Length: 618
Image (cartoon, rainbow, N blue to C red; front, side, top):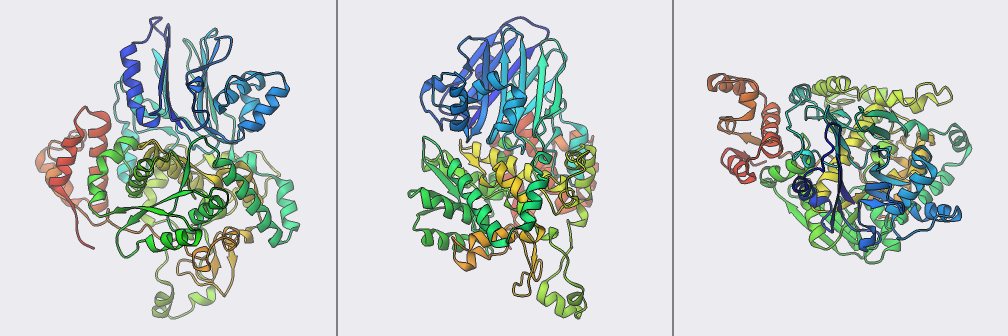
């Protein structure tokens, strides 16, 4: 929805520089191209850039003040149940000046308190409430981590922002050595706690941050995944027929889709060709006759364009397509890494960046996506039981011909990821949410029970951050119907066989005779052709990163060489021994430093990439 920034100076009572506040607004401009608001008090600066989706009138611009002029809100996100909250507040005597969810959120915080408001919010958010009289800030982030929030808690000031880049006019950045090292060892990077920037913290999902002038920030977990575990619902679901559970989850998803279509501007949908986005798109099309749908066609033998086109024909909708070629996985790196704000390892950023650009070119500001279905309903092949013993007894050649090869779990060379998660304390976050809850079923603590499991939770946060940053690069907001809290609560309470089910009638090479996301597929069968509702989860449809060839000269006079004090001969020997995967990570680390930490032009990096990097033919 927007971009937010704030500064609370502990050691200065001067007004923050107007020029630097304007620079900050410019750096956040892609997150909110429809307007920018700036406020400065002695020692306090607030910035908001607006992407107008609800109540397009300027009266809802931010920073948004209450009637008394004491409290001010800067807020990024959407509260989908704001009409219900508004009605409740109006019954209590609150009068509203706008029809925005921004004012509803502010009044709820003032009348219900922060701790009373947060559990009532259905949506995604990162916000800061400023008390002008007390000179305090209260910040909060949604329980799933859909909207990003970074903070810097230094001795002279406290700074927060939707993106680290917005802090650049106020902070001298340095790389965080531990995070850089973990990334090169195989980590995909932290999504909570310490960041790639020394001293900059990623506020964990569901956390409230409080800071008073002259004091250090305090962090308190307010919303958790464990809150969504409902033993009574679990027991009730266990007694219900599977057909009735399908009906129930279908209704929840329909209501979620309907609420997330709400906007005063057109809303579209991403169509990847997979079952999750296809189901969301089909549901949305029933109540949104002019739904615009968009697909990134990754050229090659694994292209999913035909599935996307089949669905659009089935629903009678026009499909807008952007073609993603091998070369884009090189020449789009500067823009992708600028908005991601960190080195990345996942090539899916590129097609999402490009399809979001197409969305915006078609005048759409928000899109529904199918993300989080895999995490809530267990759609990853490594979560499905291994091949039954009888099948494992088949001759090896026949087994390979039928099923291919299976690792049975995450890749063995992902040890660096686990090392990094432990170092960042992310690996223990999921189980900690259930500590002391003796009535929580054992399965809900395991990888098979809830998105709150540490590994699934980490994957989800990474995907949400990817979608947010690549979408907002083109001023497009991504919405996630599968993350309605009622949906997640239901998914946590469903019997296991509603997610993973053994059946001899279904064959999937990744998990033979097991159906993943069973209940989602049952619902999808009511909306989609059979070959789409039963379509297995596929691998990412290109291996362009694996086919990338990087000339050693790319690293001449590089940050990487300087960071590790590698003179040219040592650098050459180091690169000669580096695997292709490590060379790629070194390249992306170099690109991050160039785009996010230096003042070098993007054109210079683009030229270096064009001279020294190519993707060999498949």
